[in-house]
Image 1 (tube, one colour):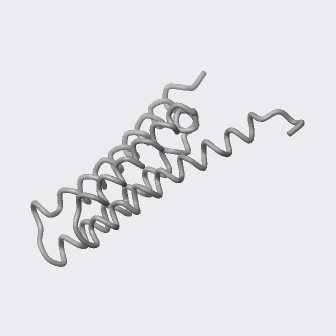
Image 2 (cartoon, rainbow, N blue to C red; image 1 turned 180 degrees about the vertical axis):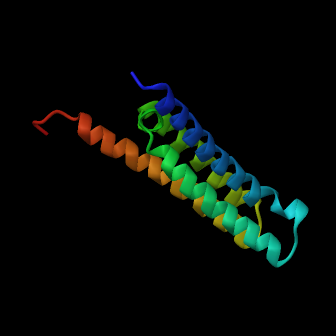
Length: 127
């Protein structure tokens, strides 16, 4: 069993990690309401970088990793993000629509890759 100090340190580390993740998402999406011009671009890209870095660290945690590798979760990610990609491509104009569709499509393809690799792991040894 963990000592009290180790438990508190773990809690604070997780709290900071999740705070950076949420703060990065907020900065990347809401900076347009507060800032404009170069400051908006800097806040958006810095928020994206912070949320990607924190999110990748969160995804490596055992409980999150186990959840993200479940076939039901992968099917949801594949279908939902594929649907959103198609919707964005068909409804949004210009480069913004194509970039959004490409990003969501990459997430969908990543989930499909997880489904395929998981299926290969579960296949009998004779195949």
